[in-house]
Length: 294
Image (tube, rainbow, N blue to C red):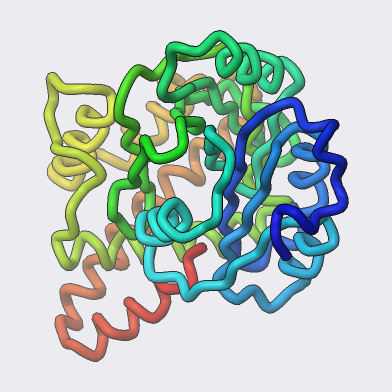
C-alpha cells in the first residue's frame, strides 16, 4: 500500500514529514503508536522483519506503507529504510513502536521545521517502566532533513549521524519500555545475545571511543573499557539509580536499576560462554539468534 492509498486526509497533515518504524512482533504497540501519529505526519512507513503476529495487519489497516525485510542488524535495517523507502517528504523521523510523542513535542517539532535553519532536530526521550515514568531521560536526534542522515552500522544501539546543524526542542518522547516484564525479559535476552556476539567479533562501535570527545564518543569509551572495571555491576546499579535519576520513581526505579545491572551481567556471561565454546558452530548459532533482535 502506497502513501497515496492511505485513508488519512492529506489536507489534515500538519507536517511535511515521513515517520519510519521498524518492527518484529509489535502488535501490542501498533494501534497506539499509529493513532499517536494520525493527522500529524505526512507519511508513515514500516520495515517489518517478518512478524508472526498481527503487526503488519494493524499497520496496513492504518494505511501505513509496509515493507518486509530479513533482519541482520539495527544499523543495516535503518540504512535500508533510508535508501530504499519511497520517501517523498522533505523531513524524516525515526520512531520505535513503543514510543509516543507528547502534544508539546509535536508542536515544537512543527515549529522548528517552520522556522528553518536546522538540518536535524533533537529532544528528550523519557523512559516509562511498569506503566510509570522514570527519572531517566536522554537527548536524542530523531528528526532530520531527508537525505542528511546515515546510521552507524552496528547490530544494536544504532545512532543516527546527521550532517549539518542539529537544534534541540522542548517536549518529551515517551518510551514505554515493554507492556510487561515477560516481554521486557524476552527483549533483553535478545539484545544481550546480540551485544555479546558483537563483542566476540570485536565489532565496530557506533563512534570512535574518546573520553574527551562528544557525548556519544564518551559513551563508546565507557563501553570499550567497561569490562575492565572492578565492581562494575554494583556501579551500574548505582549509576542507574542515582546518576540517571531512577530513584525518583521509588520502588519501580530501584527495580529498574537492579534489572539494568543484571542485563550487563547477562551480556558478560554470554560473552564468556561464547569464548569458552569458541567454535564456528557456536558463533553461527549466536548469529541466528541475533537476527531476530528487532
